[in-house]
Length: 420
Image: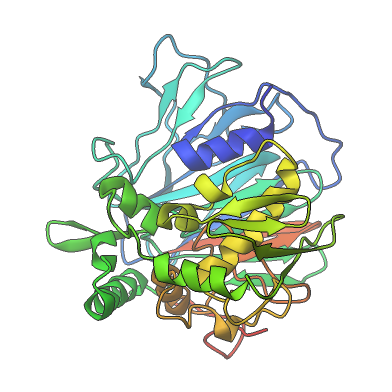
């Protein structure tokens, strides 16, 4: 029986939002609805927003806001896959500088989508407990949205809190910023990319490819000679299975050599506490009596969910926890300089090795405050450290402001990048 967490995980993997089989109803502590302000800070007067997710207090059904920004649309199970929506869910934003207010209920797996100069196509597939929402995909060239200029941010609004984040885990396209106001007047802000952020990212990928020839420029998708988006390495591998093959080999071998004679301590930041591991042979990284990890492939490191970092049959949750921290350290290339993960991690040491996730390095640097999800475990943070994932959350939210376009993008801090 699938849960909300299962549904969200599948959404991230397949770009299809299925309602979970297990239904839950929450006792409300937050308000039953929340105002979201959508701000057009692009240079276009033709911008559409979409809001999708699972309605927590309506059997976790797939829900979309209709074009008026307040009426809820619960699609019914279609007779066949690939069926069209029966309601208009394109919320028009007004001219640059304007604000459009919408109202949402409690939603899990929520996304706020934006498309400039066009509308998006969402479809419905047949599901076991209700329709599945087929969302736009950057990995499918036959998707009707593939050559359109679109992006999204993520949120969950439940009985405990509002949590929202900007995301570059799949790709970079439109600048999106978040500002969360709570009922006490406190403000949390993630600045996102400036208006020329995509151009900066693409320029950085081309420059890195000129240095190491690893194929970073292949992550750039163009439309009629203009940069459309920059894919993350996992998506790049979908289009070119040999891309980055062997890229991490020498770094992985150095890690294995280092921890053959010393221990790596991983703070699980959970009930398991600290665990120690070392490399006992040419292929295994073993953690006490818990289990072991094989040498990861490039796809394993960039994606964090396959091969070495896939779920294991024994001590599943504990090994997934350790694997997340290992994978974050691989992407940030800090395993050779810090044997206590994620404790003692310092943001200024991230991505300093020549072999690293340069997509994440370049994207973080392009953001006005250095924050944003750039790989699946970019939220791994030392206790007391600054989370790099670009999230805002609060248990007493009053409103969420979501800004698209990047004009006037700003950080709440004077430094271009926040250090812990």
